[in-house]
Amino acid sequence: MAEEKNLHAGHRQRMLKKYLEHGIDCFEDHEILEIFLYTAYSRRNTNDISHQLIDKFGSLEGVLNAGYDELVGEKNVGVTAAALISFMKDFARKYSKADIAGMKLSTSESVRKFCYDLLKGCAVEEAHALFLDQTLNLIGEAQISRGGPNSVDFDLRTIVTKAIRTQCSNIILAHSHPKGVLLPSSADIAATRRVAAALKNIGINLVDHIITNEEDSYSMRTAGMLPDIWL
Image 1: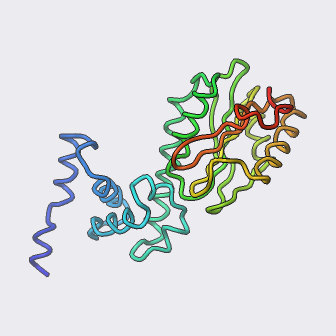
Image 2: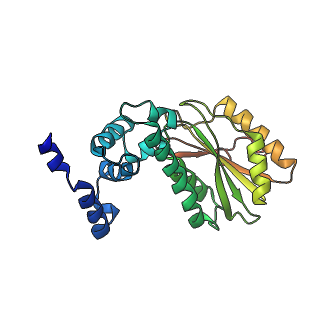
């Protein structure tokens, strides 16, 4: 026991010193998660937990995209660690919004790439809305809802409320099919029509609906679906 204690003595300080001298890119994914978990565990060896979570969810990105219920259900992961990991994903997304404001999303290619980068690595289906001004400059982005592995709801009230708050003129919907085919389901098509009608009533245009999976992205507008509802 004393030998193990001596082995890990000063390990955290060495890891933090390494980060300060060389930056985050010098670490493997499990080491990045290990360091982050220092905030949840004051004495515990977080290296084992980080390996366990990355083995379970496939990557650091997969861990961050896992839901709170999935994380807290894992052995050795308490409510504090699960909450902090969930918080970090939302924190990073909120912080990154300062960099995306004003981005031009006027072509199908730029929209599809943005949505793919936004949703890649999602473990479950997520629905997002992109809010744009009259000239298709990005004002902001928000997660509308989060579902299961094969379904997600489009909350009309949330979409309309956020649209009014941002004073946008145009909206793009995006959602992930993490384990599914890159085609809209009948439920996706029906939801798109409902959202388009609700937005039209308040003078906002639905520009496109993008679907992503692990490999690519799909534009309903570019594919010629529902041509009567687009801007």
